[in-house]
Picture 1 (cartoon, rainbow, N blue to C red):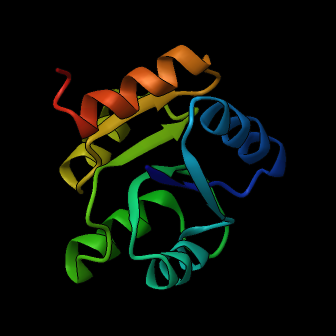
Picture 2: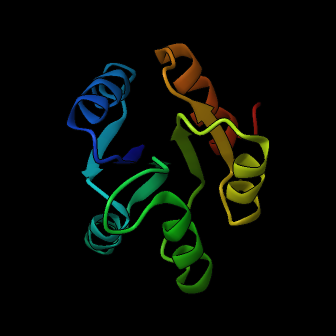
Amino acid sequence: MKVLIVDDSNSIAMVVGQMLKTAGYEVERAKDGKDAINVIKENSNIEVVLLDWNMPEMDGLEFLQYNLEHKIVNGPIIMMTTENKPEKIMKALENGASEYIMKPFTQDVLITKIESVTTGGE
């Protein structure tokens, strides 16, 4: 399964990428929402997007809204962020996020979230 990490932090992207690779996932990376659009257009086999909220150029919410309009992501989008206000979580879910994961998180939490949105939690 191929996962796209959209995060402007190189260190977060490296750590999350390593967690995913260790668990057997293929990984792509984008530095912000605009970059993610280009990566998705070049990789039609991306099955899950891990999306940060706070990024330059195009933030996570703007990317979700773009995706609602243009339907570029075929699979689930998981917000992975430090934003923990209930109204922000609701806004992300209302705009197409499938799940929400708070930074920092462990590999077990990450893999469990991915499995819950890709297999229906079965």
